[in-house]
Image (cartoon, rainbow, N blue to C red; front, side, top):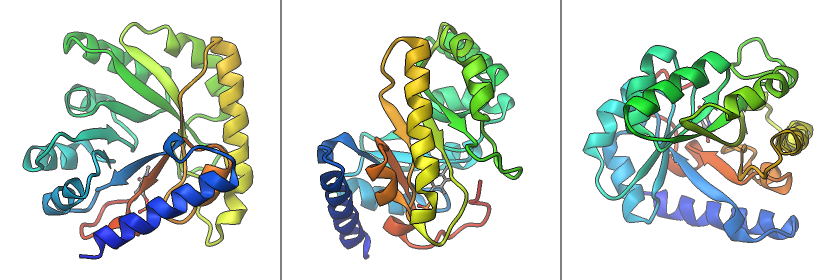
Length: 232
Ligand SMILES: *Cc1c(COP(=O)(O)O)cnc(C)c1O
């Protein structure tokens, strides 16, 4: 399997992009996106030392996670429906993709019932694409303090899926906008936010140059996805 080679190459690219930005290579976390991939692929990745995985569908994650071995951490990276919050709170160590106060309230409620406190990232639809989930930046700033005040969630930062582009350089302004938005959120909350989750297979190096602390990579690691229904 080409996975070991892909992983080495991605790690090198992450380190090089960090170098260009004057950042420590350890300041970027690699989240391996395993949606559309079978448990064997996860297990192979785990043997190579990966421990952090992302899924975008609760149902798929629920079936897959019990079949994966090792001490792994899973994060929800897609849109979450409120009727899936109970499962999500059990399965995931962080929920990326919270995009409304109602959803945050439901997660907090379900986390309380499970005796947990759950870190979340707020999803931003930076340029207002109709096909995408996520907060418009103005609305996020309005609801941020209320979300942060919920008892059983902790806001750890922002995530975004930028508009698709064949040329990563075209997406740079969106990543810059996200970094500025994170700074505004930090001012409002009066505390630093550890995470800016942005950058996927085609654009992670640019995202790192603009301040990503977590890159979510699927196809560049694992190749094309096997199952359908993988897209956000
Ligand atoms: C699928 C997906 C990714 C990974 O995309 P690749 O282009 O395969 O690296 C990252 N983030 C989210 C939210 C996704 O749904």
